[in-house]
Image (tube, rainbow, N blue to C red):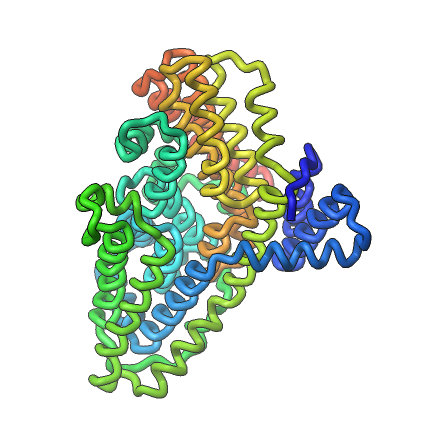
Length: 512
């Protein structure tokens, strides 16, 4: 399938999908219609002889090429692991242990955020693990599932994008390597961390909202309902299962700990740490050269083996029960996997068929921006593209090779901050897009309605985005002064949170 430069029409498919999802509250059909609208534009633009068959055939041909089976297998195995741990009583035992030690609602929120910060290896792993572990605890203290989903989503990609040891760092490093502009891709990535204002403000906002009761907008209404007993539960397969009475806290800690250890070791192995090339015999270089999706499949399989060895010989669960539970866990992940496949496909429609990157490049290079506005403009464009396609990795993969030469030509002092703005904008768009895989997995992990998660999270994401935009404006006018830029973002963030919370108080008082 040869690409077709559709210009501004290339953004119609994700716009159609997003609008339909928000209007109908149903994601799968909305994504499918968005995909078909894109392949229809492609069929018309390439003068296909049969528009109907051209539209359908192109859609499913592209879907077959865009599916990342490693990610699907990882999510499926992780669903199995989560299910069998819950079935063995490990999750319930951990929840009972945590409830005895977590004495308040605030502590349950802070513990959720802290666990999200701790699991920085991969955002998919983060989303599903934090939700499974903390859901019983937050339910006990009347925290809405929407709030839990927000914490999960806001501590997944934002943490991974500033963690030098993560699958995201590896993906960014591969994009930086293609530019040939840096002696060390790892050092270049590390240098962007202080300027990644969206990730920093997003993480800060999570802990501010966890520590202080400053909710506003739809999230405030969800929290008020939760305090009355309606946490917004969406039943998952683990809510219906028969749980063993023999499970202990170690039946959750050991398999999850094994998954983390195996993930690190497998990332090192896939990156050549024990290979023949001495260039990859260091921890950082092997991670930068690793295949994250393959490594996570191996790690999740290893964790399943550990769970089997722990549960079956001790007769915590029987052999047949373990295998049946594994299948039920796979079924639990089926809706999320379907949405992931459709999200990858619509992203491919935009990137590969309709040439959205060319449209974005023309906006970047033909906008006539002065160097001072470059970081802020890059942040906005990255956010727009990431929101439209639902993929942060695809966005910075597209933009980094464009932004580096543009920044070099306009002002070499702004290369690092412009790179950081690219990463930050990509995470923002991915964070709040209804068709983003991490948004989907966060709502699945929390057991929250996907549409409710998007609606309640969106105002919070925009607050962080505005604060970040202000920081990039300051960075552009101060030749990338990190201290002044961070201060501008931090002050803006706190001011907006307080003002919006007070406005919510006033509105509540008027309606009371």
